[in-house]
Image 1 (spheres, rainbow over the protein chains, first blue to last red):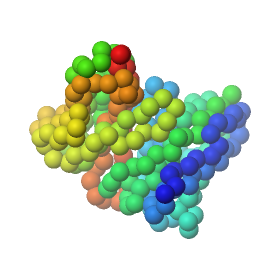
Image 2: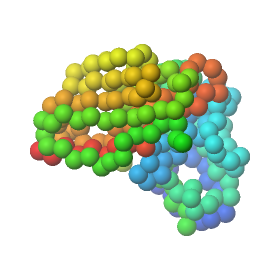
Image 3: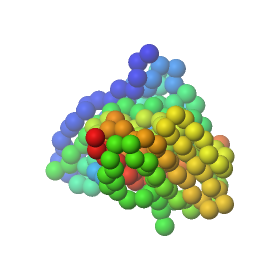
Length: 114
Length: 113
């Protein structure tokens, strides 16, 4: 059974640029949720996708957007990057909506915005 | 006020000590509670979950929920150096779609041999 994988593991961008982060969910899971984790903080919920539709969103601006594909993999897109977007971005998959069971996390993509 | 507040860290204890970690929450609609554990440079992994008031034990770990006080706790008995990580409390608002998921800020724990 393949776990949750994220890519890239590290990346550096400059302010104003756009970034796409990718996540492959665990086999059999149809839900992906995304989190932003600043250094020394807990994960902050961005949004979740259930069966290819956004199903729940946290307090993040519209420049944070996402997609889920038919194979349940997912992308997180962030436009007009700001310095405060520097963080670890975690993806988690689950076998149902993320509010109903265990979340299985990837190891994250660490984004640095200069 | 944050929806979930966790005891600030860091916390350093000797091997074999009993560790107590606490979170408080502000929304009475919260029904489900979990504790995740995050090792350095890793994603969080589930440690324990509960949805009812009272205690739930799993080996050296006990999760306690007091819904009247809106308080959740994690106890670790006979702590080991391998427990050195950041436990994070987590809750969600029930079964409606669009529910939001909230994590505490984590308490960095070091168990010294």
